[in-house]
Image 1: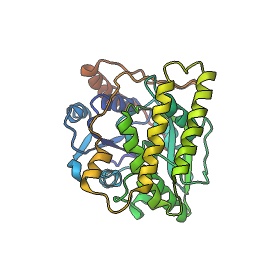
Image 2: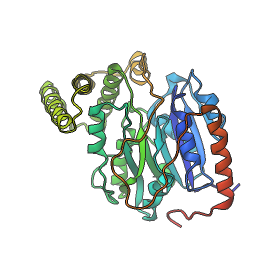
Image 3: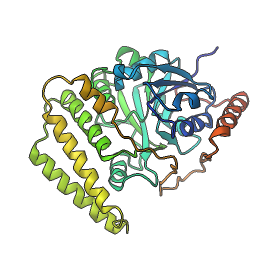
Length: 348
């Protein structure tokens, strides 16, 4: 078999409410012959049975062996594509040219990583929407001057990963750590605003706390010169809460969001503070808490919530709630398209 130009690596854990939407989106892309690899860390729901309906290569690891970098390295080792797209199981693409837009910057041989735009859906917390707007602007950047990126929606050049795998010991932010090391090798980081996905984050307050806590644990290792004091907690909590309230008033969205704004910003910055003040090695019990929160809210009705209309004519993916039959239609359409299209890839 000819090697695919693109491999998609997905990390999953109990994603039965989201995984099929992502897979349908992948197999409706304008680029044919995409290899899909799922790295699952011990799902106990229907994630694997749903994924099994699609032409997906599945690798399972026990939960106690999971780390973000480790699961990515496993998927990348199995990938045959020149470019490896990394996606969280609870994202899904908005347009059929998502993979085209995400991999286009690789036409520049010095680009090692590209990350795409993320937005929320109708269930996304207001403060999280504000974060998406800040982190993922409407304008692309072909030569970013800082190491931010996000592996929920990103692509890397496999040849660079082979020289420099992900750090398997970090509790998070393995993407930023990798990007920082990419800079040292004189490669570039690109941001593709047109490669948009919906990122379904519907966590409990405890889940948000754990997310920011483990990311803070990683941040102080990646950037040991950084700190986060009690004063930083109070200052940033106050400033961000006030900013969210002001924007919510302007958006006529304060009613129904005020409590959520306060709660999100409180646990966000309290989790960050606790992560920075954590001392000593991370116990197995703490790892389980950080990676696998006891309670996890999940949404099954995600729809794009982007007000920006693209200038060019682009095809949106029409998702369906018909879970039992959507997979068969998507796979059938994928193989039909693969036989009839010959789409050039970046770098050719």
